[in-house]
Image (cartoon, rainbow, N blue to C red; front, side, top):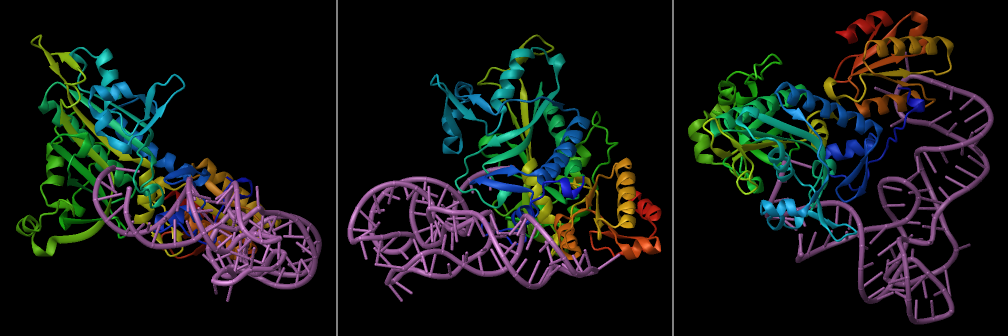
Length: 439
RNA sequence: CGGAGUGUGGCUCAGUCUGGUAGAGCACCGCGUUCGGGACGCGGGGGUCGCAGGUUCGAAUCCUGCCACUCCGACCA
């Protein structure tokens, strides 16, 4: 992409409403725009990051055996009456009425709808296990939306739903999602730790919140430091096999959010030098709730012995839009965002210090073409902006690499290459610079 | 929902107390000079002062109502 033809409304000053660093940086970097309290338009740069995050989540869900579909944002109220959650959900649910006076709601989650889909088609234990997921906008009418997309009212979420014949198989499905979550967040450059959680309105006994550690996180967390060194499974992890050892490694040490923190247990289970009090952001939550929905909604299958049994369910959410903010909270400096490569909106920023200079233009175009061919998605700053402004803008939007092309370097046959994450700027021939970027 | 605030050009804000021609910086447009870490000169465009009603000769400013947004608390991917 050429910056001169792109839509990137950067802000030099921080809008007054933004309190936390990710919100400020997202506004300043032209990633999003508030349209109403807790409701945001995703501008091109932000949209690219959102799609990268979504892509990683999708790959890991698919790898773990979940199957993608897409359910609508609007749901019939009657469906929620079946599970008795229509009234129970309260004012957080946005309710709307259509022209025929039918009651609808903007979905805050999809347990009812997926159960309805499941029961319509699945009749036999032979079809299990089954895990269906979608990535769709949700709406929860938060009392107080704040912190930008960190706590918006409309948000983008991946929600997966598992169906199994019995609790043991359900637990195995739960473990697959648990491992997939470890991989997701790891790939995004985040340190995420699963913590035992209350299940809240979703229900069930078994639940974990996945918390990203960030200094500016909104909730306090207490954990055993050794969890941070616990290995994350590689992409060759065998989802057909027994994953309980991995889950065990991640859940046997103490980790709790402040609302369920037990100081006595923390001190008994964790040596003093391994205790860590930190701050974190919840980016995902897993639930195993058994037959909570399948019984009232009559979602059952025929078991091997011929009897009808309600399916055992779980649900697994990842806050995709929140993750964008969480990644920034975890990875930024005074100059702006520092994107982990896997989610960066562009791979390399090419800064032309003298657009219009034949030599500089030639090197920029060559670098642009080669980086594009390499799949590194370059963003070429070919604007007539002052060099100082270009540097500040490129630092702000945080691309992993900066390739600086100026007349002095071109005269010497070199360009300058810099890693956004604290690297020194080095002069080297373009071909060599491309090799370094290629790794 | 309780408490506290704020709405003036795209952004940051002054002006409101004490009513009298709507301002500044940045951004934007034109010309010129510049050009290696947020340049400079000259010229220019852009605002029904959140909305409605009221008081007044006259309202951004005073009064009433409404709306939106922000912050603190209780709740959440």
